[in-house]
Length: 567
Image (cartoon, rainbow, N blue to C red; front, side, top):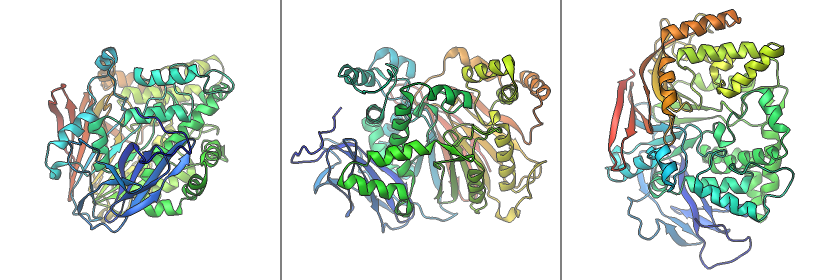
């Protein structure tokens, strides 16, 4: 793995350390993200951008404009006029930019999934993790016609594991620590990253596998974080947040997490026009092209997580229009309100932003949250019960908090007020009125389908929400992991969590704790499935079909676990 050259050290040819990643694509524009080893000018299809510098690292996001709608254009990457992508000996098809017309009659294929642990050559770790479904999909994709390729990729959290390192990254971290870095108060955990520099090791390791790197260069990719991008249980509760704040190494770790996420994931979610209006991005460009933008990003990181008047300092959620679909990606991690008396998954301002996005008519509405909205029933009721217990005082509240952190009881069900509010918004979007919903819109403007896309839980399933008089079907589609594992001892309990008997027991427990009746009913229609897999959502006119595809062996054999028409 290459290391960045020292700042100011000049070689004749700049090198591409990571990328190109094709990020935002619409009907006429695209952005291409790269990391290079020195300051240089990056050129793609006649459009160029000067790199900006952050703590010894160099990045650029090239905006490509004026592309024909519905076109496919092969591209190369030049650094200071020298072609560096595709590299020599590159055996893959050309990297291409395929624009997506903003028409309801456009077909769209969306690939999605979550929980991508970096690759490893360690036999024991490899056996535990299994085959990387994302890299394997790239290998399969390279051997097929372009017409079969996905139009976009949505990564639903845990793109890197900051608290669980591969042996390869662990060696890099250990070597750096042996030199006495990072310096500062406290000693960070030996098996976790400590700061921004060590986060760069993670990203480079996770995204450099050849088949995955090529796929990311030619499929527009959208991302949102989850807990392991920062640390397990990130923002699970106010007590957890207070405990972490007391650790002397935590502030540097959190700053590194947010700065690296902004650089490697977030800015690519935004289109060229949005970037031109983004004040922070413009400040970073100005500072990073003449010096080091790290002070600007450090100041940003200090305020991004802060709650002031129940408002967060940064909105990571975003909207994208993809042909026939409106996609709204919801930040269900950093956007949480925990310091108020009433916990919330999103602030009032973010819920209003979400409502405005849902009101825009499209053929299909896709909501994406790293955490599933609809869980197995027993788990849902257990989480709502736990939240009610934790509101109390004394030993029962302390026991509830211990159970919350032990069992990862932190999904929408554990923010019951937010779950109810989201359920009402979904009901209105589907063209119906739930028992507690706001007035429904005219069904002529309701979408053909409403899909919640999620990951996180290391198994996959479909669940159908039941709203009386709904114009559009409402489906929870959960696909996880693309490269990780769930222990065999947990598979039985995860299947049992759908049991009506077990669900009834936990529902009674929740009712006795004062939890209100559900605003929506749902039932499992497929799953649960285990193993490394990807989800594929095909949209064509008013029709929609979803399937889960699992990688079975190193020879590249795949199996389709379910293929279900949604409308």
